[in-house]
Amino acid sequence: MKRLTGKVALITGAAQGMGAAHARMFIAEDARVILTDVNETAGRALARELGPNAVFYKHDVTQSADWKAVLKEGEAKFGHVNVLVNNAGILGPNASTAELTEKDFVEVCTANQTSVFLAMQAVLPSMLVRKQGSIVNVSSIGGVVAISGAPSVAYIGSNFAVRGMTKQVAIEYGKKNIRVNSIHPGFIRTPTTEGPAGPTAVPLGRLAEPSEVSQLAVFLASDESSFITGMEHVIDGGMTAA
Image (cartoon, rainbow, N blue to C red):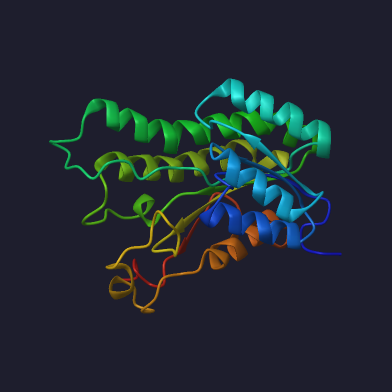
C-alpha cells in the first residue's frame, strides 16, 4: 500500500508550478485527486496526463458557489474529500504601503486569505462525516517573517493570516481527528517565484524544486503525520534561520 492509498485530495491552483507537482506526487502515492484552477487548458491537460484517478474542474477559489459545485461533482466521482491542499494564491502588485490601492489590497487578501477560509469551511462537512481529514494550507515564508522587497503589505498580511487561521482551525477540530497545518516555502523554482536574487539569498545556495515542497505536502496529508497539527512547516533552505 502506498502512502496515500484511500485518500481523496482536492488541490487548488493545480494547473502548474507547485500545484501540478503536488498533484503528480499525490497520484504517484495512490490518492484520487480533484484538481482545480482558473487555467482550464493547463488543468485539463494535466488531468489527462495523470489518468483516471485525477479529474479537473475550473474553479475560482474566492467564490463560495464554486466551492459547492466543485465538491458536489468531485465527491460524486471519487467520494468524500479527506485531504485539502490550499495551494492557490497570488503575489499581487509590487507596491509600498503608501502606494498600494485599497482595491489591490482587497484583491490580494481575498485570493490568499478569504479563499482559504472558504476552502476549509467547504470541506469540513466531508471530513466530519469520515471523522478524519488533513488540511494543508500552502502559505509563504512571508507568513512567518516580514521580507524586505516583498510585493506588498497585503501579501505579507494575508500569508500571516493563513498561518493564524491554520492554528485556530486545528484547535477547533483536533478532537474530531481533523489536522490542519501550513507550509511556508521560500524561493521555489516556479513561474511566479523564481527570480535572479533567489539563490544568493538562500543559505543552501539554490532554489527549491516544487517536488521538494510536494514531499512535505504528501507527508502532512498522510497518516505518517498523524500527531502533527496546528504547526507551520518552513521549507526555505535556511532563509529564515538567521
